[in-house]
Length: 331
Image 1: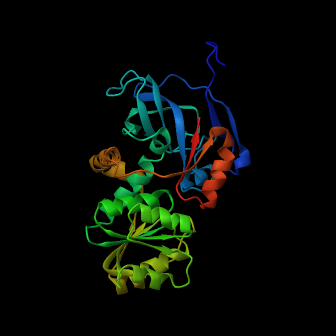
Image 2: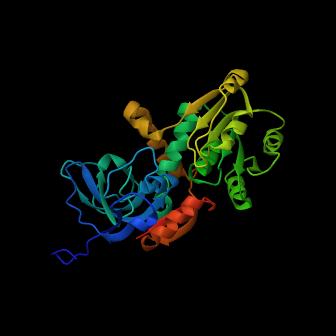
Image 3: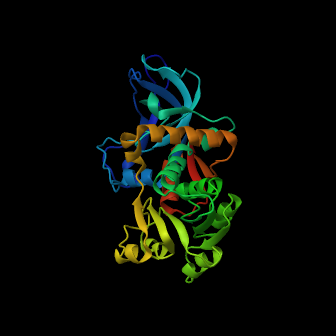
């Protein structure tokens, strides 16, 4: 406890990046929020694959220790910086950051905080923004997905994949979900996918084409990488767009002659570069995600909720990638 008798908030901290054994849940003193910051008492924390990679020191950005993982959370505002407007103490909010959210409280820029949409629980709010912003940016701004086009979503049972299914359906596309387990495929079908195929099937390409009525695919959403990228690129139609969102299965190699033969495009999707380069477009996307969640169009699915004390189990669950839906920690 601090001198006032109030318990000091805890955080999952490592003094050296690496395996989960490097991390411990321990008290962390927080100063008052800066002039443009808010302090959020965290209620729920989303755990993503990117969070785990960063904790391990295997992400494309390598932070300096001591390090607290975690890029998204929900909670209640308990203090405001002197220059913060439009927010108030006691508001239920969601927040995003590169790190720092595996904690019981956090100081974060006010610009990263949004009111939680009505009807969403803290657990749902904690996994809303990053996945859905990534997928909206990918499909609309990068992929030019149009109503009536076909969309093949790899990893459709994962965080961004499931978000891509929901957004693709909302945009009027014919969504074909590819996932590794029956539970993940069923989840995608419940979200409105027209068809779901087994990503581990030996006749996967034939199954995808059959699911699209014998036609090639207009847009591929690919957060998986590895060997899946080339075979998915080969499903593209004329002017097809293959969106590179991630590479949980490894960094792929792709014969560049395929782009020529297919008259197709390989398009990178890096959400972190969107706001710095096109701030108004990025802000419009944030507002759109909040609006669609408020309407009930977008709704995350929680696979498992664990207390923050079980951070090691939560990170292991995400690393294994077997869950149908998101893993959330609560405080």
